[in-house]
Amino acid sequence: MSHLTRRGALRLAAGLALGSTLPLAGCGRGDGTAATGTAEPVDSSPATGTVSVWAAQGDADVLDKVIKPFKKANPDVDVTFTLIPNAEYYTKLQAAIAAGKGPDVAQFFPESQAQFLDASTLKPVPDGLVDPDAFFTSLWDAGVVDDVAYTVPWYAYTYALVYRSDLAAKAGVTAPATWDAMTPFLKALQGVGAGHGLGADIGWDIFNGQDVAMYAWQAGGSLLSSGGRWTLDTRAMADALRYNASFFTSGTADTGGPTFLDAQPYFVSGKTASMITGPWVIGQLDTVAKKTGWTASHVATAPLPAGSSGSVSFSAGGSWGVLADSGNADASWKLIRHLARPSTQVAQFEAYSSLPAVISAWDDSAIKEQPLLDAFFTQLKNTRAFPRVATWQQVATRIGKEVEAVAKGRETPAKAAANIQTYAESVGTGSK
Image (cartoon, rainbow, N blue to C red; front, side, top):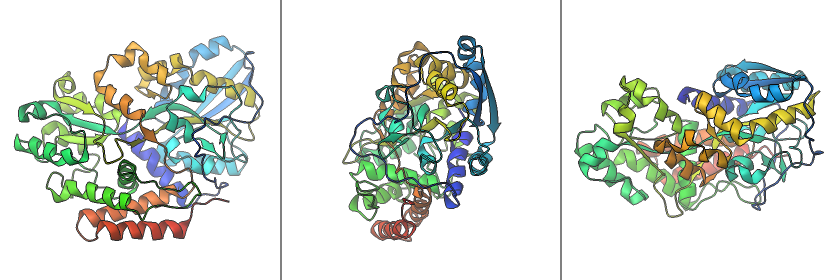
């Protein structure tokens, strides 16, 4: 599970949002009901014809293997895959859609798909195709606009705390459960030899913006009101900016590094002792350490420390949608229904370590027997979707810039929150 894949997917979406030519989606639902589609149900007869699928390289690389049971059960269907580099994926997909030459089925990223959630771009998810309640709530919600679902979740990830268990044991500390406990925990890790307690992201970009949005939720804030107005100049946002800056002002993190490419080597070497990151790192640390079993004996995970309103993270991953002008929607939805089955999502995990978006799939022994994933499962049950508006990526990028100013002492959290609000209001939400 590649950090570069995940980060690259989000970065391409950020660039796309600045120049989107697709219809702009309005606000998502806020009533807590599990919206489905409005299309006719899909029956259980075999799929036929050709289904063209476009996806970003990475998790989709193994799809031809994963869908072998679907092909066996549907011998008269031909599924073709076009895999596109992450950095080019959304740009090429947009161009194809605009030219009327898109695929039948396209992969999307729940955290950055808002610009596609429109009936002129995607078909609504057919009634009864899947059970919305089978998925992590925020992942399903990420595909819903005005009570219509346009995408079906495929794989999931979120952030949790990954830390050096050996150093924590040496220091006699356990994972922090609250914001207030975070700095003492990090200082304790430094006290037993870590260079810095936390390897914090210093990109000062959209990813920092997403982190602070997450902290704002933890502080009781919202990003967008139920009426579709930005709510960023708030005490919660200022608290989030202050909390993030505390890692640097306390000396437990360094504004000079590591960069995200260096994060894992720093962690393994002890230059840093924790990361707030996604589950893909778990499968990579043995390779970085050049020692099988290093991760099991040196690493632990925990849900994120809670702010005044709890331990909330964001949901991300992959999803599927059928383009509005698909020539074979029936077979396309049948393929997506297969990809959403628990057994298929377990097969995807076994082939590529993609974590299931279907909750019941986590009961499979292939996943259950990996205790370092437990914290991510716990955290996924307490996540929110980023605003389903076309300008969210722009706003998150601006938050990232303000994060840097606060972390480096050039701006107060309150002033930064006001700046973010002003910028967000200037770009709006992209709603019709």
